[in-house]
Length: 114
Length: 116
Image (tube, rainbow over all chains, first blue to last red; front, top):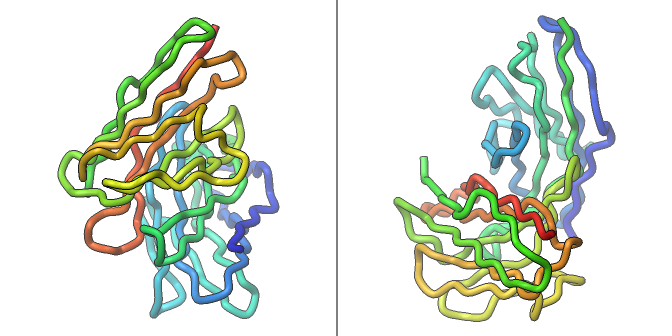
């Protein structure tokens, strides 16, 4: 069965500092991988996704993620964090059957300090 | 991008009543929709997969009779919480796969249910 692990419950970074959010997955085949962001009390917004091809994917708001098959990881990065990036971040994995049933990690809450 | 709308955004009801939440895909057809439940400061828990024209597929541990799902058309799925109790209070989010098969999910705004 597919699963997603986000080992960090919360992370605090200073504004302007770099960010890396970790994500490990378990899936039998090549997964479809996603990062979503959620602001308090709202729905989810897609940051980026990986299906195939270039293992370094660029997303919105200056985020990028790298798919490393050997490590079963899909870590999210941003070179310089802005205060508005404070939110909950979810890594997700989907299979291409069943209408792309998607399983989410537990989430990592990002705090940004001035 | 594709738009998914949920209604109502929030609802307060008395214990024992039933509450219906609607999920609509506004500009695309959604053969499959998903219902998630999110507790405060926790992740999204997949409750069920809603298939147009057929019965929903529920995840293990989710009560079918408690959470009734109907997907009567390609643009509408409904979740009815029957005989709601305070422990059913939660944030319910629906999503739908776009019709281009890209795997991306488009999420509704979520519905916050509070059962008194």
